Image (cartoon, rainbow, N blue to C red; front, side, top):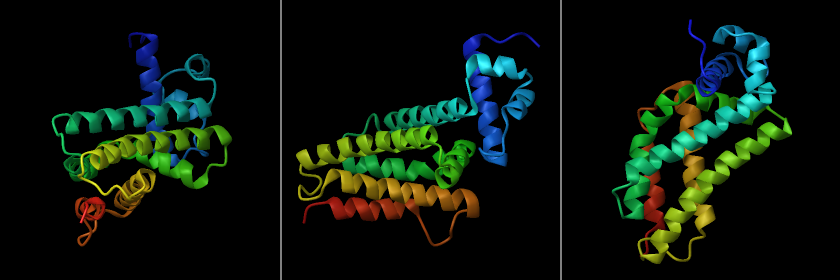
Amino acid sequence: MPRLKAPQRRSQLIETATKLFARSGYASTTTAAIAEAAGVTEPVLYRHFQSKQDLFIAITRKMSDDTLREWQSIIGNIDDPAEQIRTIAVEFPAHIKRMEDAYHVLHGALATSREKKVLTVIKDHYDQFEKFFVGMIKKGQDRGVFRKDVEPIMASWQLINMGLGYALIALNLGRFEHFSVEESIGFIVEGLRPD
């Protein structure tokens, strides 16, 4: 097997750790297991990541970057903020399926970890989503698409919480026949519209 360059090796380690953390949990997965699954030694892993925490941080940052890049791409040609939010909602079930392992890692750590660095990177992850939606909602308010009396941060967290709840349930229990994330987000968007 040819030796990988540093960026490719780093990506491989992130991908391997994501799969193992998703399958066995962050706390139960050792750096030795990650190195073995990646076909390298632990010293090679430690050249790229100083600790298991650093791997988790890299996974979460990659997930944040990939998600925001994907959302920007799918709404790039849409000017109406309400339609942008709806488009993200329509694409969200496929998005979480594509990033299923990363979501399992994030949700597992959110529910069980008490490590300050882990919790800080998770908070940063959601802070980026808050900023993304706040910008969209403010733009809608400036254009008269959304009510001006709604606090953008509160509305942003309604969207985030709906997505978080949907992802947590759908990935662990399967899709529900009588629940649609698209319709639920649409309900929030309609509540933002002026009378």
